[in-house]
Image (tube, rainbow, N blue to C red; front, side, top):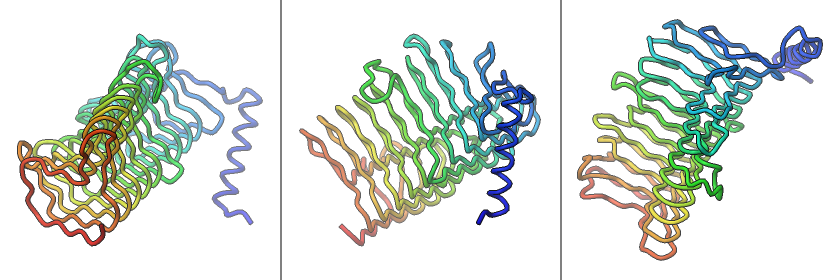
Length: 344
């Protein structure tokens, strides 16, 4: 028995496939500029002769619905699947059930962004149940990158994957750095809610890796999926909550937050933001490195004056290293607040 919605989707898909086959709808379209997007299954929007597949930057308000492929992939620097530029451009709703990719294709080209939100640009709700990927083969891959722009709500369903890849990923041998599944650095006036039931990950064949990194205000971060940072060498983080003058109200983890370093310096959850209200962990926060210290939860109380008001742990917060002492919870130069651990 089909529901009305599923039957409608099947009919729409069948009609789209028929129109593509007949040539009425082109299977591949060049760059879309300053227009709302409704990209059906089986169709591709690419970068044309440029570096951006969907480029929005005229100060208007748009919606994006993607069930097909939006992909900017070339031997050029700075490739963008979707770019929300400045000039107060707004995407009120972005829904992805297909594939969004921004990637560089040669080892001499750098910076690939699945979705980038520039200063003064904004996305209201970003709902992903497909793939969002950014890859820079020389350096820097970001699944989602918001620097000075805002995302009010980021929802990644159980089928969703958001990933940033530097080089050729794990074991790739390119020695590329800067891999971020999602990086959110919004203006001080904004706040982001994040709900992850799927996978958010950064993967690098070198170092400086983050599954999720924030330098802005976070309302609630709910993770029941996997947030992973993994690199072949060092400085690897699952989740990093930071930013001067920012705060995170609540972090709820019933999934896995993990940092895995091939050599040294891995952290599961790193907190440098001045204030975190409540951290509830009922599953796993962990870090693993091969040769140097790792930290399950690392809180910077000194230089950053970071605090957690309430830490409730009924799961596991752990760290391990092949050769060096590691720490489940590591308090850098002071800790303030209440810690309540109801299970070891």
